[in-house]
Image (cartoon, rainbow, N blue to C red; front, top):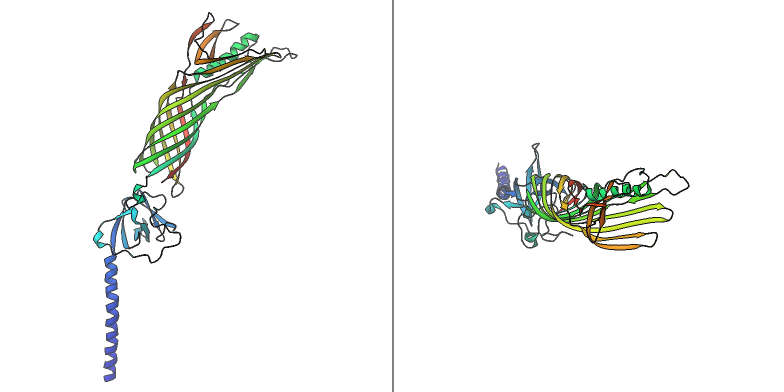
Length: 396
């Protein structure tokens, strides 16, 4: 019996020692639990405390998380899923704020750096919400690269090309077979840089490049197959570069409304060629430049395809009217004659050999005049029309 009591005493002492070791640990674990709140637009929950670690979940702004501890610059947190499950992972300190700083246990020091780690670098695709050093100066910037198309209203240069085809038909005395196609569309390339003022509003600068041309050729069948059929070739063209300042408003994270003011530099051109016979050739070429102020409005959507990469598309409307074109025009013929004129781009009506009036467009040093000239004025060109574009957005 004495031996039994001795064994019991030894066992009791062992249990007390073990309990003394476990209980403080449990109490310390409970004390480590604290809450943090996500302050970034979207924060990445990672598998390990490293920016190169896999992303487990993306957590929206305003979410409150239970944190167990802090390892260096990373919090170990738990996130409740919609289906009732809970996942654990690491979130960078620059993306959250601690709701009760007094409850945060001392940060666990990192005895040695992880290979390739950059502890002060912000995780890709996330907006800084604090931190120090260069993290505070990092600008929340979006860069947009796009391509698309735009309709235009280029009545004067289109009517000038069509009118010349009719005027030349009156010269040879035969109606045209076919018609001159108008220039109605341009290709569009764009780049924009926007600063995110807050999750719903961004302001920025940008520029586009618009370019369009339309080639046509009409003939005047004479009925005599032994002779060269007279022909007129036309190629009206347009290039424009708007420099824009604008805003983007996001009612939802994936939908935006864009508005901008733009200063346009545009160049209109014509390239005409008239072959009347084997020995008669005439060519006209001209380029003229104008400037104007315009505006754009558009609506679009964005879709995330990577941590910092988005695809976007939009549809919009442009309003811009250009006039006071000035440039240089040249004329030459097969007989060796050649002339060059500098001045405004004029649009006017000229009476043809058949007595009808035809619209013409040429650069002239002075307004065309004479008994066969009607309604001479400086040409106008409308860039007003629909815009459709798509591209990619890089978020920093």
